[in-house]
Image (cartoon, rainbow, N blue to C red; front, side, top):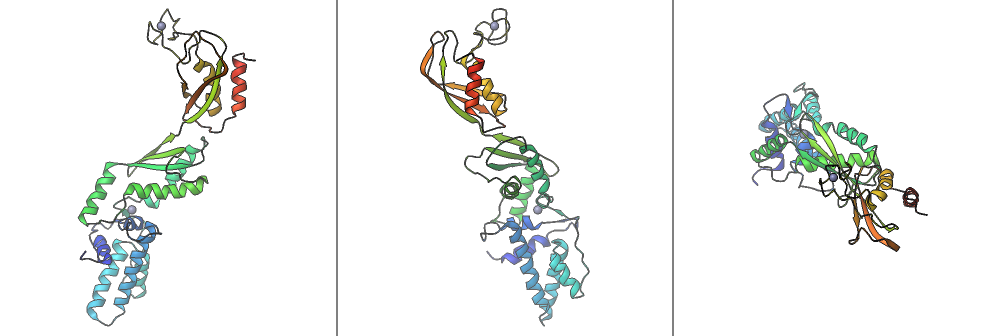
Length: 320
Ligand SMILES: [Zn+2]
Ligand SMILES: [Zn+2]
């Protein structure tokens, strides 16, 4: 640890040769993310550059020529390479430079993704519109180009206290999305996960929704109905003359008789039926019935009216 954190920051910006690029405040902050707590990476980045500006302004106001010369060099690095407006202002006010804020600089690490998170929020908001959920989580899969560039940068400057693109993105998007959707982030068991696949120039979102499990009990008043769907033994489900091209060994099943009402209520098309225990086709199931669980995958609705479903199932199957 020969260098102070300020020397490290100056070194980072000194290295930037391309006048079109910089390191944004978010990315600067996350290079020191493990240091200090109860703050954000943006605040870390801003605080570092502001402190540096103040320190060098102080040196500039001192009487030692050597210190003054050094401070001017540093202030110029902060004004030009870091595009930091307080440093630009100090230089301007002291009559040293007329560096102006530039808005066309591109962050070498995030290519300004962290400065424009609104597009990522807006897209998620649109997708979420059709789904009912109480909480969510953000996940990210950054392109290897993003990761490699960052890894090189960190190792070149021996930055050992940094946070990855991925965790910064997850947290910042999670915070903003939580406000927009008015729903909390849930880490352990989220009902919906927004998975961002992200590269510098494009991204898309996949939704992973938690299945909805509903347990119930069924009575089977007729013999000859299997619990779940069986493929035709002759054609393995492809459809043949024997099965009348249905692909089914039996014309129906408990699963097929019960599921549609659940699917309709949860607004999905995919389900799995889990019956408790084995049941022979040619027996009835009377009395309190056999427990079952129906798993509804990718449900758009999570609140379903179970009484209504029960009535509809019974009505459709002519159970009085
Ligand atoms: Zn950045
Ligand atoms: Zn068949």
